[in-house]
Length: 289
Image (cartoon, rainbow, N blue to C red; front, top):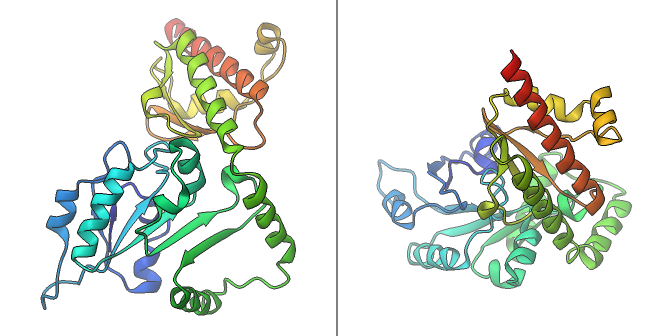
């Protein structure tokens, strides 16, 4: 299979396609928008040569987590589909945040996944279900997936309560994802307007609800994230209340924050206040030290 080098299934799943599927994977460099070069893809497709594994699958991720919640362009998906069709290669979409993509782009899910052979969807994350994911594909594909799930110990008995929550989510929670996107934009706007030289969010790459906060004030990113989560007396005096912002390091100089169902507009504003406060505070401490 071929996937991006920043894809979730490559970076975070223990190489399980090899562990459990016996599948060899080839990684192409992801572009900042979550895509990869179609020409690069063509040059890496391997056919029935005795020396090579045969390329049978391409995997994409929409929205793209490591690229900051980017929505894959529909034009690129169409170009990808055309190449894969020519070579009889299936496409799987890791759509853990697929509904964020449809809300952000205004393109129906049915159109986004039109050329996919299979799609996975997460019902928790931004949608807010307590647990649950769904895999979508042809009838024969799902029958095989259910057998493999059983063999791997993935079956859940008496799961009606979780199923009910998932059905409610699909009926009621999709359109409200726009609120999460709006709150992410609000945080970015407030932070950039007040402390852009110390910490900033690239709004041109902010498509959905994942914010990548670039810390440029010289503070180490682990310390910066720890300070955001902590509540100290001086901030209560300055801000009027204690605010804890939970995030984690994304690179040596950036942190990842995600807005979701439990974050209101007021909480987003408070989060921005805390980020600005910590950016200024840690910049001062670096100066004095």
